[in-house]
Amino acid sequence: MTLLKNKLSIILLALFTACGSKENKNVPQQDLSIGIIADCQYCYCESSPSRFYKNSPHKLRQAVVALNKEELDYAIHLGDFIDRDFSSFDTVLPIWNTLKTKKYHVLGNHDFSVADSLKSKVMNKMNLAQRYYSLVENNWRFIVLDGNDLSYHGAISPKKIAQTDSLFTLLSKAELPNLQTWNGGLSHEQLLWVESELKLATENNENVGFYCHFPVLGEDKVHRLWNSTQLVSLIDKYPNVKFYFNGHNHNGDYMERNGVHYLTFKGMVETDSTSAFSTVEFKKDSIFVHGHGREQSRRLKIK
Image (tube, rainbow, N blue to C red; front, side, top):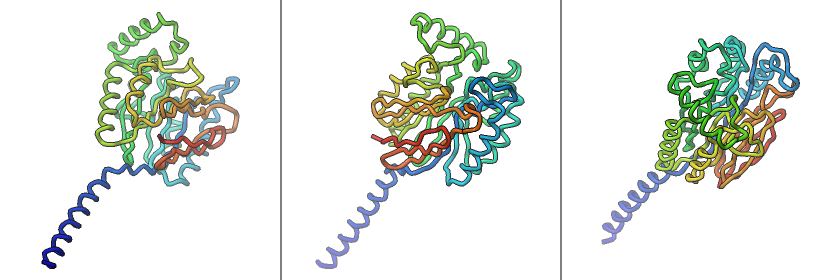
């Protein structure tokens, strides 16, 4: 009888261990570290009152040196890598490519401020296979949006141009402050894709973060995505969404809504010599933004 009990105990222990191991695989491993830069916006152009275009390569090089000293899972640029001229890519891309970690781009409105004949070459130049996409790291699903999907600078195909006109005309009736030709919007197709990504993240027990060039919330209402209200309403339905990071407004901005942190990172191109970039650490209950230069450091609590 004692021998039988011992064998039974061993079997139960083995089953418990196996079940425990299986459950552990579903526990989010949230610790990771990334680098973030917004609005490098380089061109060989004379400075405006606050934008120092020619200084961007120097500031980008400083940021890359600093980021290369960190153990990063990846780095991402939040749009407007250049200000104008397709040849501007040839100055800043070699600097960006010296990053030792994986690297990604978000499309900004100025990234399409090139000759019409070259707009179709922008994605390949920036090493982008898709205009919007997602990536998964340590049980986080990062959804990268294309806010130029419908726009007067980034819409290339006749179908997208027609959809842009339709959306702009529809929204103009509401006299929205963000209905500027230098902003843009998400197509119906992209919104459907976003919802499919959110459902997939829910099924996989993943936290979600968004990257886009254009803001959707904050004190600033002028720079927002055209159909920002529609996107925010979609985000509200999914409690696993934890942040929305963007650029575009070089002064920066912040707002929290329903536990989601909407953070606008400050533009690198602003100011003569002081840069702006960040390293961001994801922990179990917090996101720590370590700002450099003009960028503010902050703790974003994960709820």
